[in-house]
Amino acid sequence: MTRVRAHAPGRVNLIGDHTDYAGGLALPMAIDLGTSIIGTREGDRLRLHSEQFDTDTDLRVPLQDARIQPDWARYIAAVAVEMNCTTGFSGLIDSTLPIGAGLSSSASLELATALALGFEGTPLELALLGQRSEFTAVGVPCGLLDQLSSAFGSEGHALMIDFASITVEQIPLPPELEIIVVHSGVERTLAGSAYAERRAACETAISIVGELRSCSTDDLAAITDPVVRRRARHVVTECQRVTEARSALLGGDGIHFGELMNASHRSLRDDFEVSMPVVDALVERLRAVPGVHGARITGAGFGGCVVAACEPGAIADPAAITGRGWRVRASGPARVELLES
Ligand code: ADP
Ligand code: MG
Image (cartoon, rainbow, N blue to C red):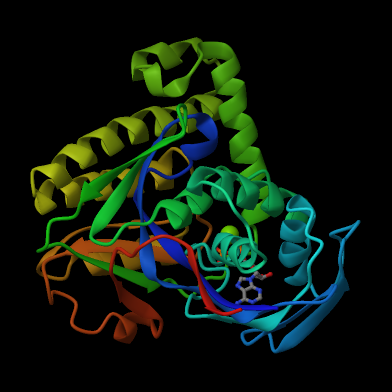
């Protein structure tokens, strides 16, 4: 019988959206909001209570099938199946993340679950396990952005992720750069089908012109379908912006970093078409605040959250803007501590 506390951070993507499944680049950071699981490894049942859903799951291990109720328990079951888990667990799930808002509560749940159940391996193996579990749980062929961000989080650092080589580079955040996240108030209901459509368009583009990150916008003329061409143009220009954003952070240039965030939002709005008028209006409102360098939609889109980079104190109370907002700090990786055994 071993008592443990596992914690996995959520993440905010500073720049580089819809590039992960296209072998591109992104620059997220793990944040000081996340999912914690506290409990005991014992017996042959997985008994967990979610504080946020106020429901329980009770499953016998080893599990054969991850398609169970309540819906959130599918993530737990999927992780247990992926780990071939044979020891049970009794405990509590608690989260400080908004759920379904694009700050990656699902990946943080997957990673916290794996660590609580006794996962042993590298951060990359942990992230890959989370990605497979997400697919098993909800059938979403997600990229690796969320899971890598949580597994590789580092205090005071953003993470430059190269999805072609699956490598993560820590980029120090300038101390005078503050990151604010504000919920648009729009829940991400259409995200599933539209996500699959965007992903398919990128795959079509790659089959015509090859890897998008090594293309220039001129190369995209070979794509005849104007919608596919615009989707590809977003990925190509977004990867260029991520590279430039990395340099801006390393040079301590928050103003240029903000300009790149603004350009990223325009590209996601016009070329990738994953924004919506309410989100655009929130982005404009944040940019109009003195001391805000830039703002953009973050995550898969279709609602959810907006991220802004600004001077310290420019936005005194992020929660006052729409009722749900946070000043976030770059946090350390998913981890587990043994309380007693
Ligand atoms: P996001 O990852 O952007 O927050 P998702 O739709 O990918 O949004 O994942 C949200 C789902 O993850 C929830 O509907 C729920 O099934 C699961 N989940 C996240 N946090 C918790 C929690 N604290 N307790 C139980 N389930 C959770
Ligand atoms: Mg998610």
